[in-house]
Image 1 (cartoon, helix red, strand yellow):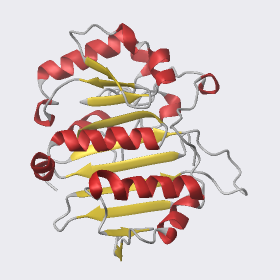
Image 2 (cartoon, rainbow, N blue to C red):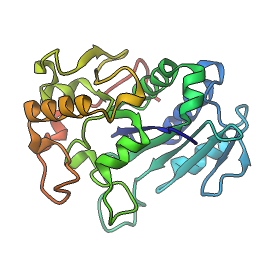
Image 3 (cartoon, helix red, strand yellow):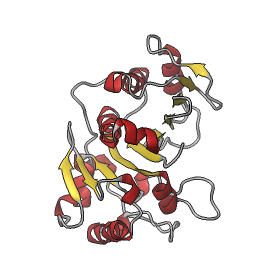
Length: 261
């Protein structure tokens, strides 16, 4: 994929069979099948044909401890992603991570232009709602890598939400409780465009077009917003090992949708 857009969603909602079914169904049905996978898999390489009429096997893959659901759409690939169930098995020696429901995805930039970047944003917003996420992001893959990788790492750093905010990006989505803890309502309008999300929560947008998200002016406003909200709350790739401030998550209400799975 070229000029790739990247998304990530962080949820505390346990991936039961019912929840796994709800998430995979939402992916498949969005926009009349606009994002529906052609192929899926429990591991890579992804080779199994995706059947929207029978998702029982993908649901089982995802619902088990350390379960995964990988998907691909298009040839060449237009969209791809991974749903991760980070819950440990009952026999594990250590507790499961708080944000055990983690969804990552990518979109080909030219394809996004063709269908409309607004559709991609609508998709991420809707999946943020469906997953009951506390934080979500949509930016370019170049931007995400610049803020969360260094020359010595091959994987993203600072993406464990229980330990701090992974950063600020082109579009950022917060649950109502998390937004309140951060104080996003106090941000000056000159820094960011804020709007309420369907089903609850707040979206912060720093630029209209993806290709602008690495512009100096955009990065400057993001740094100013982080300083305003408290730099100790945000991951910084220049100081990857510093301890970050985080809320008492037991005091942050779990986001809910109209009906529970």
